Length: 130
View 1 (cartoon, rainbow, N blue to C red):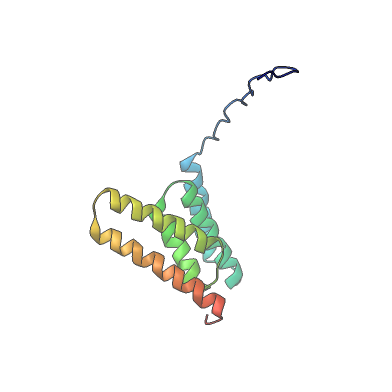
View 2 (cartoon, rainbow, N blue to C red):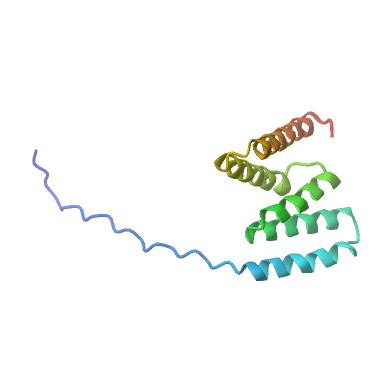
């Protein structure tokens, strides 16, 4: 076949974007500051916001277990779908994958059950049972 016209240049690929360097110590320090503010939170909404911020900071710092603790506290105080719920699903699945790779059946079952509990929570919230 003959094609008339200009030859197409190979698509130029943009330079690989550099991932921002995450300063884990700084993120943990920020989480610690927010923990101190928890005690003086003026109301329930502020407390839940702080719990979610702390969980998010630990998540970014790759402190998975700490992130789980604070997101779970947030959901205990206010059972609603949101950041705590979605990040907990991610974290539980991460822990489940780690357990599967380590062939740790006890933790695998534990985190599968945690995922099931969150799925039940979402059903209860949607149905107005919470």
